[in-house]
Image 1: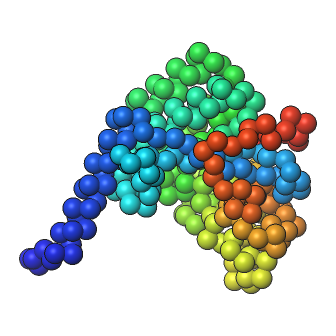
Image 2 (image 1 turned 90 degrees about the vertical axis):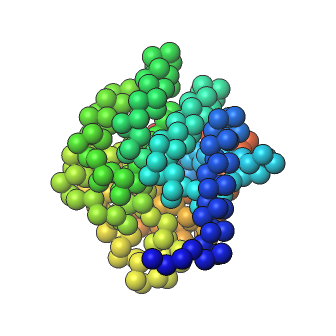
Length: 269
């Protein structure tokens, strides 16, 4: 067996320290959501929804980078606790800002995490209309892990007005049969295909195919990681419905929700 090197020991120690900080942040409620707008491609002045990204804070009040813990947390109950924290923050924001729409990420594993499901059901009981403002994003890989559990979960909460996004669309291996059975409302095209899409002949067919497939299954196509007007124009011309990325705004802790205009077109989903 190979002996541990000073570098490997330091890296392991660093991961343990980071996970400990994450647990502390959750325990002491040192967390917040940062909101990034997704705008309509046809009229970028109109916000379709906001995506809420959870930010966990270290003892100094600085954000703990998600890349330092999320891969490990995802396979543990800690990942479910993070999903629960994001859900609670999103529901609180919807309660304080009626009429807006917020998307948050969740793992399919959280479907079997009772505190997460209980929190959502309780919120819907106390404020029945709040579901219309919530969009749950589940990535393709997570969807494939437990489809038999995910289907009835989606059926139950769609009746409460909640919409569902298939995240990282085009990067995973979701079968056409499951796409048909799940009935996702929104398909978010993986950002790795978007960079320089207006001149990347390699990725253009992938994006066009993803858009066509989304439309065929009645999913509203959204592109993430849009950073230039050239990318935005190409995506709009090729049928993307909403655009999300730094071109339209970075994630903000205190966004101006009044920009979510009331005289807008119907939101996706």
